[in-house]
Amino acid sequence: MTALWKNNRGLLIITAIVVVLMAGLLQSLEPKVWMSIMLSGATLAALYFLVASGLSLIFGLMDVLNFAHGVLFVLGAYVGLSTFMNPRLLFNTLPFFFVLVAAITVAQHFGRIFWRRIGTERGRRVATAALLLLAAAVLFLALRGFPIRALNAFNITAVGGAVTTAEAQEPMATMLRRVTMVLLAGLPIGLLLAPKQTKDELPLRPVWQTLLIAGVAVVIGYALLLVRDPGETFMLAMSTDVRFVLAIILGTVAGALAGVGIETALIRPFYGNPVTQLVLTLGLSIAGIDLIEAIWGEEGNPPMSPPSLFAANCRSDSLLGWFSEHCQSIDVLGRAFPTYRLFIIVVGILVFIAVGVLLRRTRIGMIIRAGVQDSEMVQALGINVRRVFTFVFALGSALAAMGGVIAAPYLGVFPAMGGIFQLQAFIAVVIGGMGSYVGAAVGTIILGLARAFGDHFVAAGINVPFLDTVIKGSPAIARASTVLIMAIVLLVKPAGIFGKKE
Image 1 (cartoon, rainbow, N blue to C red):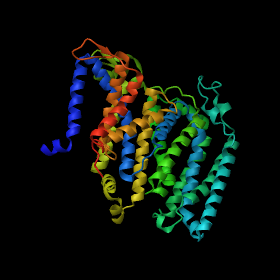
Image 2: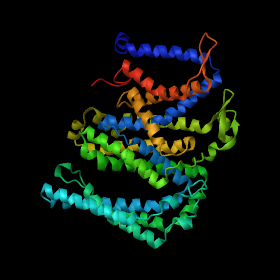
Image 3: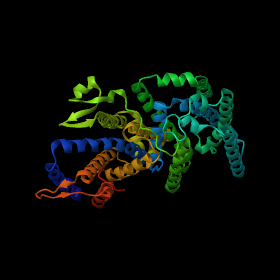
Image 4: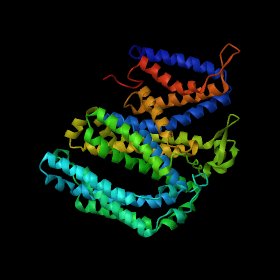
């Protein structure tokens, strides 16, 4: 107990002061009011956690501050929105992805032979420049004039009005030509991603496995073109619950695949060079948002409708009653609270438990924790640390993208949402301690509650204990509350609550 007090004296004093102030504030509020504030704070905390947990995992293992993490949040939201409301966009764009993956997989497998035949460094530089120009030229010719805006104009609020599927889609012959050219563009990209030095090589999978993966991807890509119209009709005929689950799955997978691409193409060549990584991910965050705006538009999109489980226009008296009534709100101490927000809280808790079990109770979790402590020793034991790095980056990216899909019915979908949540996630990670998974969870809870109480403070004011005075603040105070908390924590404990001094 003495050691605990000595090592954390400042933090314990601040905690005691905060508890006393919170107790005084809660005394001035009705139970239904402070319970509603607490639940609203928990909702924000759950969304912050889905972004912050991935940031914490990636930094803890790889010492990479990924400033493009917010882009993955936005990507998940938009992919989920398209799956739920506009599947024609998926059927007209996913073929490009599948054939590109197929070509890159094959070219990357055999690219080692290509680079071994180029013995000089100057020759490698010339070959790299030539492959870059070739890939860019073929992709430009393949995608020039692609009607992406027309495919996105699916609702009456779209700029220029809605466009019917028949008018938005290109003829089959044109799409086949585009997909085939993208397939060809993937070959030089795969060669560029192949290791140029023997020391950078990883063990190859058998040739038959590479060809099988590529073949399946090509078949899926061309098959999606053949079922564009019936596929869209089939998906829109599904119930909102099924489409919402599909939106979560596809949004999460999109985030994971984007994470793999970022780690493989941008992060992996610059391990040990944090300045370059920071600049690359910062540039990617800007370019990524620009790309998302080019595909989905700069305007905000209509909010994704919540599943029918949370859509009935009624208020359930209890959680048990909601299971049969599926009301959009539930009675909490005499005050309505949206049931979809309770769903967000449950998802945050389940993700915290699932990732915690993964890290503590599985072999891959043991490797990740060991890699955080000493990655060179793990590599010396014969474990492929690079693939572990890729897995962790994909996991963190998938969590952020899933957060975007889940946030879509709550917040709507707009390009700037990623920057907002990324900033809060970074603050939460700093408060909890860089690289600490539990610290990220604690940090998000602190920020969520602070923001919820701050918003209430702005809207209704707070009665000062022992005085008949109501104090109200400006919206800027609510926004600045999270930064203020971070400053206080860092003044008391510079490494964060669960951080360790280097």
